[in-house]
Image (cartoon, rainbow, N blue to C red):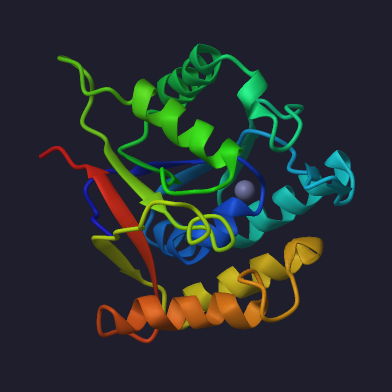
Length: 224
Ligand SMILES: [Zn+2]
């Protein structure tokens, strides 16, 4: 992780995406002194015609994960039904992200990849791109995109990471422990969100950069 800067903002569609996409990296950022904020757009409850728990339970899980990984949890459009962010004007989402940027002043922003099949993930990605336009006078902010198994690899675009963050040892263990807190989002094998698949992806991303375990990110923008 590039240690330029002190504050990181993570923009996710649903609570659990932060763990699946970058949970090990969040553990490292906290250990390295970053102030980390994770902003979840929706409660993530009404997915795929199945009600996965209640919004209140999901908030409690998000809080528990925030204590484990040491970040500040924020809900920014909590009651948009899952997979229905198409019904929210894009300008409104971008303005929400602009408000988060103004409040948290991040040096680093992590969010979903444009590759994702999940429409909420793509809307969050697009809102981040709009809000983070590098217009003259804008602060320098890095923008990286993580992968979310069962969305990124099921989409149409290839995920092309350029940044690898070593999460071997404790960060990976914290990521897996955090995932256990979202129990109903962990699937059985061979689903991409099974525990075995998450561990296999961490091992593969590590193998891609000569480490035991890693998380991979597309680099959208770095300004130096
Ligand atoms: Zn999601």
